[in-house]
Length: 185
Image (tube, rainbow, N blue to C red; front, side, top):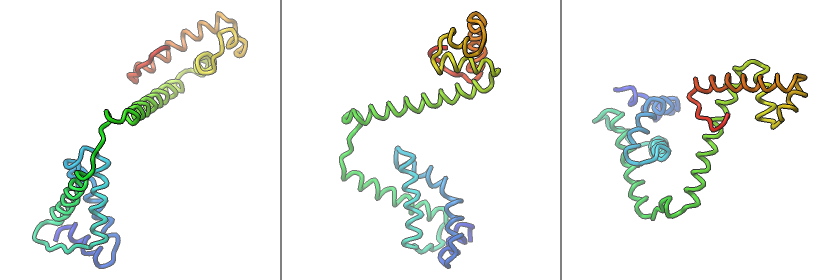
């Protein structure tokens, strides 16, 4: 008896740990197999979840004519085919037919990219000398002029201008190491 079959037998006898082991052992492979039936990895995950739910609710009999993995994947395949049949009953609307969804998706993608860029920028800023971080923060994030930043830091305007130049150069070097694409700096 293979390990999956043994775990399934344990589950049928009341040990929920057997089901946990089955899910742990077969979940990833089942998802990737079911991915072949759908163009969406999230849908494949749902189909795999439905497969494990079927084991819990219906408790089908494993006849041991094949390996447990083969039997489990057959259940998953049948669930995926049933889902595909039900899906053909409904009319799907493409993104082109619903521009609001496409625009929303594009804006979400832009927000995500912007957040990732912001994380990289802040990570690079933390690696700079404290005075470089301070001047860049004042000038670029808080919007102070060089004169105002000079007053805050108790330095001359020329000193602040030099500091801004060096800080930008140091930050650019850090960002280039990260393959950061920047618009202005």
